[in-house]
Length: 333
Image (cartoon, rainbow, N blue to C red; front, side):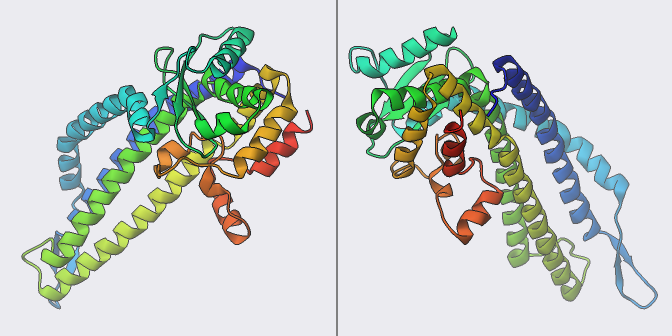
């Protein structure tokens, strides 16, 4: 596998981050307009000569309402994004139970990180360790002050120095390529959209049980409108989920191949990283941490170790390529 230059990968990821920053707010605002349009459509209309209620979309009313609430949506999303973006490192540390690792506590790990950083001319990131028997490692952070490489005690116990250098080189490459910043940007916006969708679906559910959208409509028409909105809401949620899954895929499985190549180049031993991946694949994960946003950062995603039909289905929307494929490519270096 031919390794793409570090500066080229940085430019690509910066471009993707910019596109994400633009596209996600547009999608969120588009979803808001569609939701208002649906509510308006099933709330307004007229009775025809036969006495049947005919639904009608009042676009002017929808646009007027939309322009009134857009500033609140943009402001809310901006505040939400800023808080999540700049506090993500602490959130990850609390969720995983990671603790800072100093040289005096484990000179072996600290020296490996320091030597690799000196070899590629990058600043030394923070090093965290998690007391967990499972084998895991990941990189996180958005800038020099927050970049962190985190490893588990299980990883330190099971890997030799060559294998550990390969894994750490992989994680340092994520930092050098700005993968961590890109991933965090996508995770935050995906979380915002998922939360909004959940609230919308709950609102629709409450409407179905506690009342319709129009008091002027008879019960049959009213009930039908609620069921239609529930159906449309379910379809929208399904489409949004598909988009979220494809976005995670796009951000992407390729970044793991790039990090493998960079890690192998940095430590100068592709077979050591391949050997490490084999060991990690036997016991990946992280204790009781079930958060998907954190699992996306793992060197091997534990839920993508399924086989057979489930392997095929999960592979369609996987954030990581198969471990077997990664090892095969490393062995061709």
